[in-house]
Amino acid sequence: MRLSPFMVRILSGAVILLVCLGAILSGPVGVVLLCAILTAFLLWEFRGLSDKMGSRAPSWLLYPLGAYVTFSGTFLRGISLQLILSIALIGGLMTFLFIPGRREGLNRWAMGMAGALYIGLPMNCYLLLYFSSAKGIGWVVFAILAAVVTDVAALLVGSRIGRTPFFQRISPKKTVEGAVAGIVGAVLVMIFGNFVTLGLPLLHAVAIGILVGMGAEIGDLVESQMKRIAEVKDSSNLIPGHGGVLDRFDSILFPPILVYYYALFGGLLR
Image 1 (cartoon, rainbow, N blue to C red):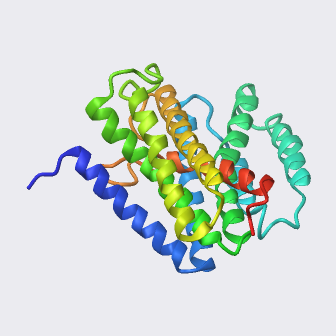
Image 2: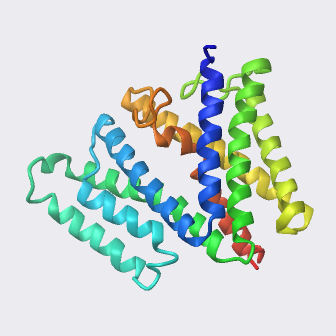
């Protein structure tokens, strides 16, 4: 039986989700390894996209800075963030005074900095959520599940009853109806997660669900815009027939940042 592209996408997403959840539930070592592996793949794909966007992120800046940002809040928190950013600023720009192609040096430096933050900060926040609370597994698992459900609900509802375009110039198939359904789905997942493990006041669970839904949809649109600028369909062919890792994880990049700082400032990490 030949599966439709939609079913292939659903099944591949389910397999990737199960692998990630298995690594998270295996303990701290699994979480750290998962973050390190995903960071490496995502940075590699971003570098390829940046090249097609016209300003290739330099590997000597993108990879070390991305790795540092990923672990800056946990294992590398003893190293000053200001020091690393100062080195990246002065050393990075100074380097382009001497190497070929210095005319485009500023753009390449900016792309390297942007890629390191774009990939590193979300991974850093996942690690902070995991290690900053006794319920760290619950925070991470349900933030991911809510983001995944946002993507699936938006796709299902948008493809069936969606009529009103949503950011049509970036992603023509997205609809307002799908976007609303995605946020509702995220809220329901967070309410369920709150009941199962987090134990927050209901209003906090709803607010976090809204933040996750919005963050997931913005993350998806941002990556779609990058691919449109790069004039490519997928971020890579790393997953045969299904695109790249960034295509599968774009919607889970922004939610951990929003969730972590909401929980931190709200005193919910305990």
